[in-house]
Every structure is written in structure tokens, then in C-alpha cells.
Image (tube, rainbow over all chains, first blue to last red; front, side, top):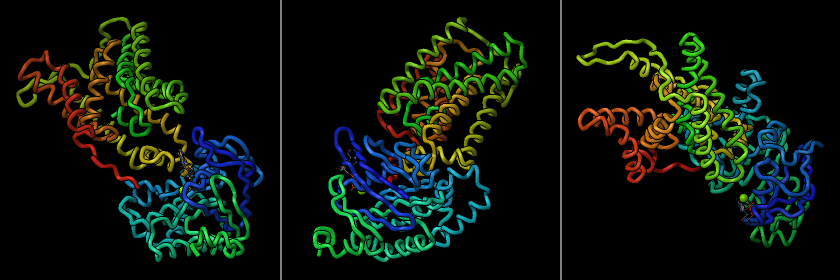
Length: 237
Length: 266
Ligand SMILES: Nc1ncnc2c1ncn2[C@@H]1O[C@H](COP(=O)(O)OP(=O)(O)O)[C@@H](O)[C@H]1O
Ligand SMILES: [Mg+2]
């Protein structure tokens, strides 16, 4: 569903992505692992149209989306849960969730948005209890749930996640990944960027290892888990 | 207030805000006095035209510069201010373009004589503040504009067109500027924008830059201090007050008297 070919992106003169190729198959969970600074976030930013790319192309369902505006890309069905969650702290949980549906709100009946809201609450019931609270007062795990719920309110066909486990306690991580597994079972395609390679490879179908802006290795996740190099460098074995 | 609407959504300090006030007054004068339109109609049209000028300012002057730097955009607003003043001078060369008072005459209140205009000033300001408050808290677009000011990148991930929100911010603050120029300065000329701009900016800084409703309190505080100084010392000092307060606040409390000192970043 997503095809990336020969993609390069720069920060000033620094090349952060170098001639990168990647495929995300419909219905899969695909993961990207790699050290800090490898270019994982840059790649997600490029897909979402937050930064311009210099060479190469990104196609979504066969449509060239390279360098479209970020809001258009959301409209086509790609939502991102950005690194560090980035919830709107002064706004309430409910306002955050409704902003997730901003793009389609004008064309969608309010009742449909309400029912999508209920689906998010069913996935993360905590959000319902906190609906009227400012998002900034939530704990890290709750903010991550909110960030995911907010992205889901756009009804994406592809969900991009940038390090959803960052800074969270193991129990909370489990809860969040259980939620992601539910979403996947319901048919959502997921592209997951993770520092925690173990948890990412265990739940995904296919994995890419990124190194200094290039794909260093790619394979089915179960094979990457057994790959000696991966074990040594990313799994700490 | 207009200053802070633009600042909070775009990070740009708009030095042409005072000229929006000027346009409000001058257009209303032309429409009401020269074209003999009913006052209410003239006022509404003047506000709408100025709003359109605000939108065009963003599209034609600010928008093309967005990739360069904030400083360049701010300097561009200074340029816009000079341009607007020149336009004002060409089309309205007179020193005084008096708009009829909304209701003329004076009343005695608690032993003081006040002009009836003051009730319009207070009433319309209150209505405008309430309308903006409702807009920012109850409407989808208003909340989206707040999201843009909190975190523009995250806002664009919501499918919000951040550039369009910036355009709305300019339009809205031009509307408010026009209203302020209209009710406050029934007699407007092409160089009034500078004084009104300084006062507006001072009010915005007192309330805390980016704090939209703080600016209202800032404005009230500034007005009270000006009147006190004019009454106690001499009215000759009145126009000096804004500048003195502006510099003092910037030196002592750059975040404004009501400003948050620490912004929560998540
Ligand atoms: N805003 C930026 N400006 C300049 N360089 C950046 C910026 N963001 C990231 N980089 C650089 O690009 C490279 C990739 O960063 P990033 O995509 O954030 O890596 P990752 O998410 O894998 O940790 C790093 O070398 C980083 O220093
Ligand atoms: Mg990263």
C-alpha cells in the first residue's frame, strides 16, 4: 500500500535519508528499528509531508504523494502518532480527540464522529474518564493513548507510530501494544518505529533496520529476531 | 488583542496592526460621510473591508516569506505598515476625518460628565471579547487555531492547514483592529495607526504576548494609567505613558504581568 523508492531528504546540507527503498504491505505491521539518529523519525516526517524530500518518490495506493501538504496526506488516510506524543497540553482530552477528526469533520455527520469517539474510548477507557481534563495533566502513558486515539479519529488506512514506548513503564507499554494489536486485528495497517527492537520485532510481520539514513537490513521480523547481527547490536544479546 | 491573535497563531508580531485600526476609521468615514450610507452599514462594511485587507496582507506579504525567517516576516509587517500609511495619506490626506458619534451628546454619571460614545466603546469591546472567546473555545476552527498556536507541527498532523489558520488570524485581528479604530477614534487620520499600534502593542505586552484575553486586561490597565497620569500630572504626558510602560514591562517582566513564566512543553 505504501511504496517508497530512492528517497532522499536533507536538513540543510546534511543528508538524513539516502536513497531509501521501503514497502508497507496492506494489513501488515511493518517496523523500523535503528539507533538514535538513524533517520527513523525523519522518514516518518517525510511520509507525512512535514519535511520536503529532495529525490525519490512515495506512493500510497499507487498515488504519488511525494511532497503533498501534511493536511492533504492526512486526508488520504495516513495518520502519524509523532515522537514525544505532542498532545495539545492546554486543550482537553475531548478537544484533542475531536481535532483528530478535523479534516473529515466538515463532510462527516456528527453522529459518525461520536461513534468513532466511542470506539477510541472502548480501546482506551481511561480517556473517557479524563475527557474534560487538560491533556497536559495526563501521565505519559495516558498521553500516548490520547495521541494514538487522536490519530485514529482521522480514520486512517495507515497508522505511523514514532516510538510509542518511549519513556513509559513496562506495564503501560504492554497496555498500549495490546491496543495496537487489537487495531491490527481489525484490519489497520501499521508502520511502527521503535527503539525497543525486541517488542517491535515480536509484534510485526516485516522489519527494516535503518543505519545513517539507509536500509542496512530488511527481512521478515521472525528472521530478524534470529539474525546474529541484529541480536548483537539491537537486542543486546 | 489583535496583536496577540496573530502572534499566538503565527509567532509574528504584526506592526501593521495600528494601520488596521486606521483603515477601520477611514473607510467608515468615507462610507458614512462621503457616500452617505447609514452609519451602521458604513461601520459594518468598514470592518469587513479591513478584515479583507488583513487576509490579503497575510496572503501577499507574509505567506510568501514563510520559508525564510520569522524576522523577515516581522520586518515585512513594518513594511506593510509604511505602505498602508502611504495609502492612507494618498486617499485621506486630511488631518481629521470625523465619523459622527454613534449617539451624540453627553450624560452625567455619578457627578462626572462623560460622552455617550464611551458606552459604545465599552459595549462593543465587551461584545467583541465575548465573541472571540466563544470562537476560540466553542468552534472547530477556533480550537484548530489554538492547536496551531500550541504546536503547529502536531496541528498539521491533524489535517489542519496551518497556513490557512494564519490567514484567518490576520483576518480576525484586522476585524478587531478596525472595530477598535472605529469606536475609539471617531476622528481618524492617516498617521493615527502608529499611536494606536503602540498602544495596542503595549496592551498586548502587559497582558503577555500571545495571551489573547490578557491583552484586554492590559488595555484596560493602560487606559486607566493614562487617565490617572493625565488627570494628576498633565494631559500632555498621556501619549508618553504607553511607551514608558512598554519599555518597563519588557525590561522587568518580558512575559507580561499575566504571562505564564513557564510554558509547559510535552
Ligand atoms: N530538525 C533537524 N535539523 C537538523 N538535523 C536534524 C533535525 N532532525 C534530525 N536531524 C538529524 O537527522 C538525523 C536523523 O534524525 P532522526 O530522524 O531524528 O533519527 P531517529 O529518529 O532515528 O533517532 C540525525 O543525524 C539528526 O541529528
Ligand atoms: Mg526519532
